[in-house]
Image (tube, helix red, strand yellow):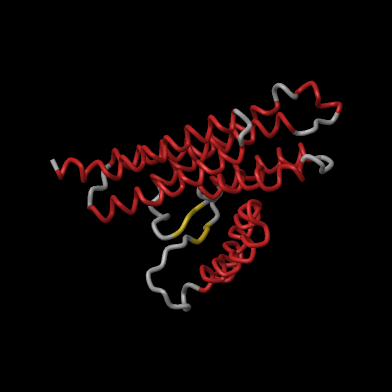
Length: 236
């Protein structure tokens, strides 16, 4: 009996991630973006602990891997896409595009499709054991959630905000599947040497969070990508 419970702990945590993503999606459809972001963050916490628990308990399984990808696409693909969908309905439209107000927001769900593609590639790509190739789906989801919740009001008053958001959708979808190496916050040892870029990232994140608060992740994620590109060029 104990063995059955142990085997199902990681999958149960993964299901909590999936449920968090479903709740986030519901809140996003209702326009409650702060709550949607809160449940995306909660899903990210569950996502962190399901893999950790599977490793600690030694109960990793193919089913757990597939379930994890499904949960991640809901929480980090469908939920942020729904937030963007709702936000696109609220943005001011130029007069010449106003006739597309009922259609254009559906472009947001491309994020969910590319997130699924990113997760499928990750499952098959053996190069991503110590780093990432392309933007991880949780990072993309947190970028969109932070941008909408922390900076949405400002975007409403920026000229050409609609094309800016549409361009960001295209860019973020491309980043999900791009063949760009990005460092992972995994430490084999805690010394400075060999971990310089990771420590620089973590140290610089502190003032960004304190200054920008809810908007901070919309800056931290691009900063993470830029540091990764710098690290690649330095190695290279």
